[in-house]
View 1 (tube, rainbow, N blue to C red):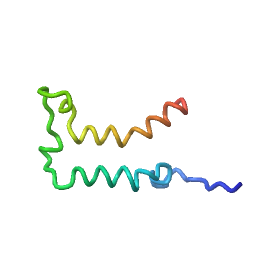
View 2 (cartoon, rainbow, N blue to C red):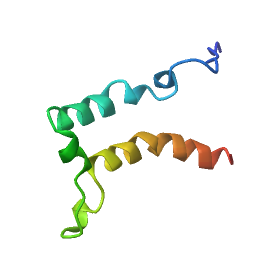
View 3 (cartoon, rainbow, N blue to C red):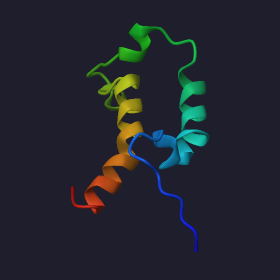
View 4 (tube, rainbow, N blue to C red):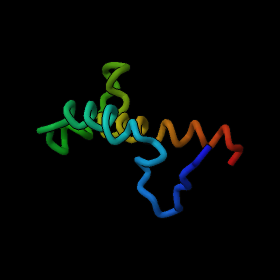
Length: 74
């Protein structure tokens, strides 16, 4: 079995190819055209608005990384 080694300076999409296609494309299409104020909107009025869109996207982007980090015991 041949395995390709990924160097330390390789793009993250080599480790997480779904970020290059599915997740990135979905998130990008959802926020296209939103202003900075819209991306950063937070409110205590509704449960869904306690986190801004920007914070949600940041959380989604780190999800796979955090999952591996925990399993590798780092």
